[in-house]
Image (tube, rainbow, N blue to C red):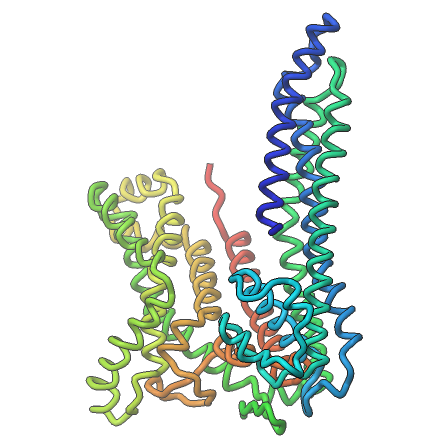
Length: 486
């Protein structure tokens, strides 16, 4: 049974518990001749919550723990002789999981049955060709011990999944029946239901915090592993980026930092003035009919996927800049460049800046405008000397948030700026950013114990700290210098 099916069954049991609990509350009140403490729906809600919530929590915990326990059990059974030279057991486990998934697909398509799978041996069966028939590719030759480990992995997973299904369903039934048996007119069902809902809301509010803690923890742990293998001083101050998965790598962060800042600077150079002018026009000059049309039209740009912007940079903007500017001026012959990615990224950021700035400008009280007009100022003088100074902290915060968005962009840079890590002032040369290299270092079958892969986590941690600092700075500026109006 898949987890999705199990969730639907638990929710169905909860729905049954709701209606039967509500009905029992009404019946017990009539039988005892007493008034219910709460509305009948609260009694049904209490049974439904006791039925669903503990069972779903158990399912979530089981789904998290089961793969870890099974993998640790199988890893201990793989001998060192099965590990390829220069590899690790983690790479062997990749093949183990793929073989197990492939066997499930073979059974699902009816090619073999469970008895056939149990009788299969890697030394007499071409496992690679069998799995290729269902679209599963293996990274190395399958040894008998690896194939046997995959079969044991699959058997353990099936047994654990069956035990999970039984445990979750029993939990839902037992606790649901217990909650149903407690229904009586004096039961404070409303208090129980509201306490449950309050706990669920608190848990939901903790998701963001725990997610952030988990992200930071994973990045920090893997980054420390990298810095044990590669000196932090060389990483942050070297100017050469040359990762080699065969050893002898150079991980210089400075070229990536320069490319990131250069592309972001060009993007902000495009987006900030255009976005701010759009916001001023829509807030102070445009009529209500034009504003009702123009503002949604501009914000449509924010809904375009970044891959579409990247294709626009690759197919249209890059060749145009190369043919009409870079080549005639002798600045380069590549369509992938900082200018290409920066221009397209700037277009992407325009609705972000214009929308935030427009809301900030509109928050300035009308009384300040009226006072300026009463002193004889024109509309343009009012905008320059009254409205913009009052809204400046919020506008600066919007600029910094846009900068964080630009620094974290990937697809536009991949397709528009290229992947060359270099220190260069020419904006028509191909360069790359931190996010692009994070993707490239984690692409394909990688060994997570090697510095060539762990460097992605060090890059991610550094980028996280950088963008977090920008966000904190934006909040500080807004809170310190914003005006309080009554």
